[in-house]
Amino acid sequence: MSENPLRKATPQEQFEEVTRGTVDIQVPEDLKKKLERSYETGKPLVIKAGFDPSRPDLHLGHSLLLTRMRRFQDFGHQVVFLIGDFTALIGDPSGKNVTRPALTRDEVKVNAQTYQDQVFKVLDASRTQVRFNSEWLDKLGTEGMIRLAARYSVQRMLERDDFKKRFRENRTISIHEFLYPLLQGYDSVALKADVELGATDQLFNLLVGRQLMKDEGMEPQVIMTGPILEGLDAKMVDGKIVGDKMSKSLDNYVGISDSPDQIYGKLMSITDDLMWRYYELLSSRTLKELAELKAKVTSGELHPKAAKSGFALEMAARFHDEESARKSMQAWEERYSQKKIVAEDQPLVELSLGGTPKMLLAKALAEAKLVASLTEGRKLMGQGGVRVNGDKVSDPKHELDAGEYLVQVGKHKSARIKLA
Image (cartoon, rainbow, N blue to C red; front, side):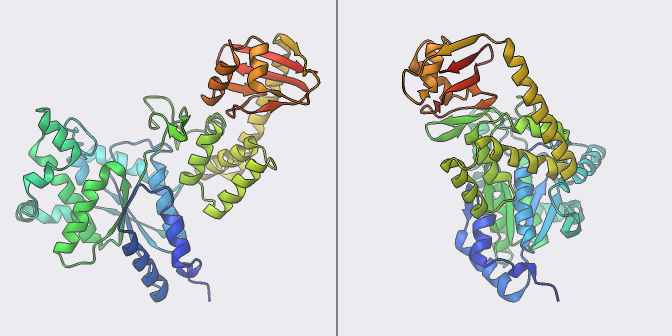
């Protein structure tokens, strides 16, 4: 008899893994109780996440939710991938300052199929229940819609940040937009959801679902919101990752449909700090495994580039396959090696260590005239603008041993620095 996947980890271990990287949990103690009950009874929790098929092409930022769903799924819980084919006709107003255009049924159908083709690169198709909210929302009818609308006041709807802002700025708010949170909340009633997942800008909608379940005399769902993923150009500033969200319009994204070469190459370009952020939010490695990996990098046992390569390889394999991912890694390494040959064309600057075993990289940059001063060198390193032999170096205390290095500062300055 095979082991029940619900018991492959304790409720506490499950809690730590499924909540990692969350922004808000309503309420943590309820989730712990649900996980404990599931563990004892062998009955999986129903985990719901809704997707309006308004964007046919997904990127890594969209996969945050899918990754959290997969973690629940791997612990044996029932994941419901809900396609909002009915609610897409309204258009989710979350985070919008203007009325969002509604989609036609035909547009929804095409986008929904594209979604399904992409999401199973993360989710296990054999253990995923795909539902469409038109199944129950079409049946509501006029009377049902009116009764549902009667449950919430205009005043409560205007508590939403986006509605409040638009009202204050005298921007248009259409009546049908007030229906969206109610319909999303009704989805939870229809599915008898134990947990609903969403992004931070969806918190109001998710809370509506929790309230509607209470009104129906049901055990309310636990709400979990996750962060919005920063783009490839984000960096650490004052101990915090700062940058625009991942977006195709900003060209700082990794597309789920990108080639394995593109996925691997783009992820090898991120800073070491951002790598750990991505690892926590997107990797299938456990928190314990990540802690061990980080300790190896910190102690110098493992180079940050090797850790980054591990993440890039995992993502390329996730959206394609292991063989393609490894070929992309090899191709990238070959291109990286070729850059060393090109480096021979760069000017050679010879510096003396002056009897000491090492030299601060920032000092070497200043003496090689690649920066105006030691201070500027440290600042540029902190901003992710300095590379040594192709690797970004952000630690202002980084030192160089005797030897020859290809050093790049920004996009336009580079030299071979030889320390003797």
